[in-house]
Image 1 (cartoon, rainbow, N blue to C red):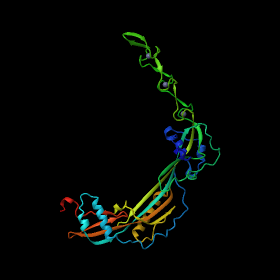
Image 2: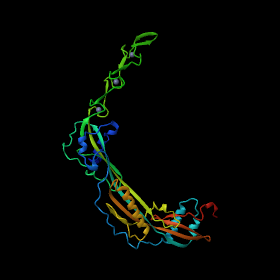
Image 3: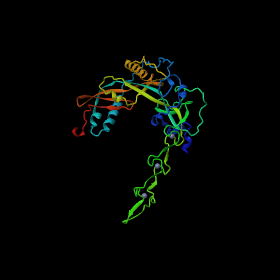
Length: 374
Ligand SMILES: [Zn+2]
Ligand SMILES: [Zn+2]
Ligand SMILES: [Zn+2]
């Protein structure tokens, strides 16, 4: 299958954008003042544009107060299996304690992982230009749109992305400042003459060869050769307007999408390093998605409510004034953690089994080196 057919029309503008020449590189090429006056309010001119204010108010969610979320600790069988697997994966751990240990207690220390995702869109504008090749401009006098009035489809929710768009009715044609609208610039190497001093005879036209003097064969006695920089033309094509002499100036809108995540794992202070719970899988208890979410208030574990309140507030103060919040998503996951107490050779030890994957954390495993175990 020819994959070229899979490219949508949306791919095309991006290709064109690669040829954009941003004004800051080419000096003062801002469009005439009348173009700017079309743009109103905080939408005027170039720069970062602030989002328009919201009218929606987040509504409290009703799903986060189910009271029966405690799950029991894992079985002794599972605890032994998990430890045996863990020990087998480490060459210097003896299997004896895992086989011979006697369980004294399995204590459920299940904890919660709260996550808030805020998906934002920000918009900036700057004047840009490209060589004018006779493109048809929008009807004069048409009302210009503000940066936030232009609908730009979101490629994917909660995924970072960026797109450049030309603002409608912002285009105008103006002469290229770089070349004074000539489309070409003088060649500095030959100072527009198209010829430079001959390198062989250094301009004398005579060449010393075999002790006698001859006419120089490179310049045929003239002392000058064709300039290689401009191929003898005396000028070069203007790189800014690519020889057109005119530029199409327009307001380039850059739309950026970004997902911001805050994760909080409730620390039950059980001796287990809570940061190890960031990566394991949990069981999804609650999902809430809205343009703006309301902090979770009635979850049985107060630490989750506190984390939610703080994250929602932080995201609001961080993003609501500088970007547009498109969507928020908050989730609560239950992460199973079991603290296992066992005795082996008359001493007690503990280890933890955590995550849906039943990972093991056994910092004080009693027989870490097989060499010392009989
Ligand atoms: Zn010469
Ligand atoms: Zn030249
Ligand atoms: Zn030019």
